[in-house]
Length: 241
Image 1: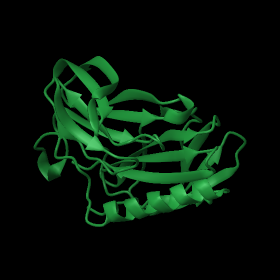
Image 2: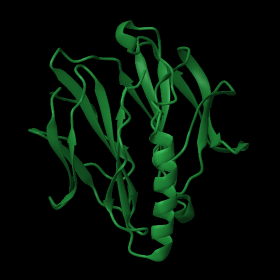
Image 3: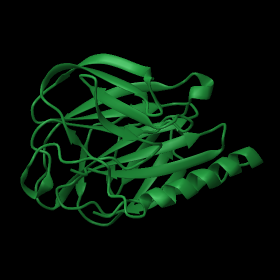
């Protein structure tokens, strides 16, 4: 499956931000070549789609190191900033979930009991900026529902550190306006090429791109970056499983 590129929408305004951006894009380019998402299938469904319980990470914290999510003390997945991720299988039931820094697994950032249901996909979102003590981790759950032929499902995650609310518009479909560190529910869109915009709370366009979701697929569009660093990224996460 093709890996979506990172779309850079804003040029940094100072030398430190520019250096950070150069280093980040270099690492991201190396990652994207030949990387199709580090997760396995969340169950052996027909066509490679999840049919049981799956878990993945979407890492949208611009200054956080790579993180590892563990269930019952066993590492399930490790991801760096905006690295494409697929779903890995976990057993249903209530079990402890922890998120730690991959280079220091004893440094736990998040720990909670989580009830995993059958036929459900779970995404661990890593948000915010550590340097401003604004980092937050949350888990979203979505039941496995595939749209009808000719349609796809799309949702929007606002991981931009800056305080504004944003919404995603693709073709004739527009998500609700959501605050920083929030994610919308899935909406159905045509499985066809369409123009998309990310809009600010005052209706201004902050990002534009084209998207062609595969038939009956799920896509998560993530807006990330930092107002202080004057840089903004858009990453498209297909449902890789």
